[in-house]
Amino acid sequence: MRNSANYIDWDVEVRYGGKTIVWFIRAEDKQKALAVAALRLKHRPKPDSKVVGARESQKK
Amino acid sequence: MKNPHQALIDEINGLTNEQLATKDIWDVIRLVTPRGYADRIGSNLNIGGKSVSGNTIRSWGNDPNVSGEISADPWGRNSPADILERYLFSGLYPILPEGPALILKWFQLRLAQYEAAQGRPEMLNALENNDKARALIEEAAKLLRGNPTDGT
Image (cartoon, rainbow over all chains, first blue to last red; front, top):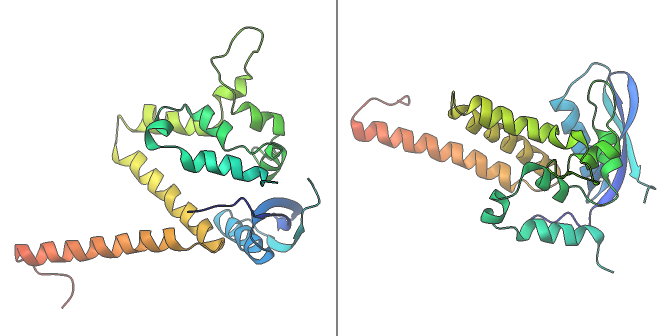
């Protein structure tokens, strides 16, 4: 059964429609957080968009 | 110390279909909004060119029927989920019952894609296997009826 309790909070920096924004994504690891962001961009495409990078969220 | 998300996840996973079916959509939204995460949910959203405040996200989980001193935020009635529920079952279902079923299947497929991105491809595989099984059943039914099949 799915259990996301031990996921880590990631701040994923995204260039979206020419603007830099941060998406908060909970995932097991950085690669999965980036994969979720990339899928979101694929589903809601805008010109000048890409996933820039991710780091562990400092916000508690 | 127990992970704070674990209690919430245990509550979600412990719900029976009967318990879930009796809940209003605002109560489901309340359940799936982890304490301390409303601001982040709102920040991820973009509606009308603006992110959504944590207060608005929290208000979507308010009981709209509460009156008196504790007045419910009017957003409580107007969450996107509430609007979707009304579209599906007040608007569309009476006209075309297949419509809500297709839309919910579309959401299920989309969820399966995100699950796969999170390293859990089981749901996507199951949905794809359903398609293959259905194609096989249709093929077998054609053969049983003596109709020519698409294959040669």
